[in-house]
Length: 271
Ligand SMILES: Nc1ncnc2c1ncn2[C@@H]1O[C@H](COP(=O)(O)OP(=O)(O)OP(=O)(O)O)[C@@H](O)[C@H]1O
Ligand SMILES: [Mg+2]
Image 1 (tube, rainbow, N blue to C red):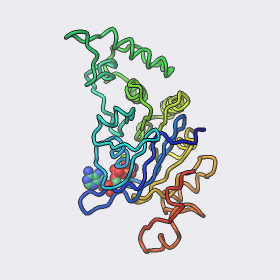
Image 2 (image 1 turned 60 degrees about the horizontal axis):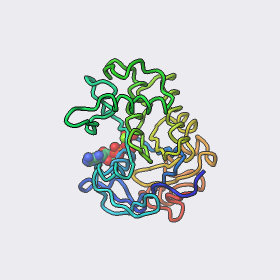
Image 3 (image 1 turned 60 degrees about the vertical axis):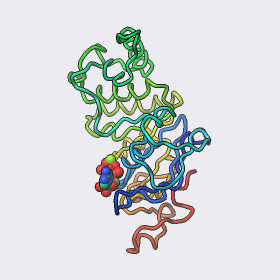
Image 4 (image 1 turned 120 degrees about the vertical axis):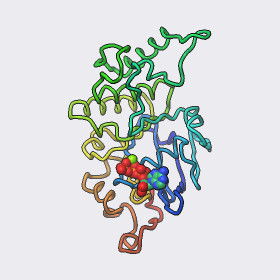
């Protein structure tokens, strides 16, 4: 396991109008590791991801990428750092085929025409590199794919661009058991290939099956980030629902009706 994060966030605040959705959030993602980002509905997971990917501006806080302070003001900034996101609501176009989807908006050209052979070759190599063998033809419309295959194409699309950090927002939410297993295997392979992977999931079995670290958001605060081997299912559930579990998370006083407040050194503690 690498000790140096690829991406580190410190003190991230984000409000929508009067509503503060992220409060002094610390977070780290490590190369070669899957970091699970967990939290209840509305905890702020997707918002945090949209801050990382340059969709939402942050109100305060620092981003450190590869050891350097960076600012991310747009999805283009994020992409140029090698940050790719596969969103909760999959952004694939049903009426396009696999290759067209993977290169949408970033098509390869040869002169003024599209360079179809190169794109097909790159798509094929990327899928092969991820050991994806369930797709019959790269030229089939995405509408004809199963949910798991669609998710696979979306993930392959994200790794096509020399990405260093891939963030997956609930990739298995709509999938059956076998397809979930396939996608989780793919998630693991991304990390084994050296990428930093962030996986948002509500499914504790998935989280424990595939993650190296777990980061828990509670009402917009990062209440813990710990190695998966150092925590139990029950503790993670407590962090998600109550913001604390034993010595982890918010200080006791903070959850005794005084409203949430950071718990000093344990908040967002990155081990
Ligand atoms: N564009 C927006 N404008 C105003 N409020 C927003 C906006 N986006 C999110 N919120 C609010 O921010 C909070 C966090 O939402 P977010 O989508 O980040 O949660 P989440 O952890 O991803 O939840 P889920 O598990 O349901 O996907 C919610 O209370 C939500 O209503
Ligand atoms: Mg969400």
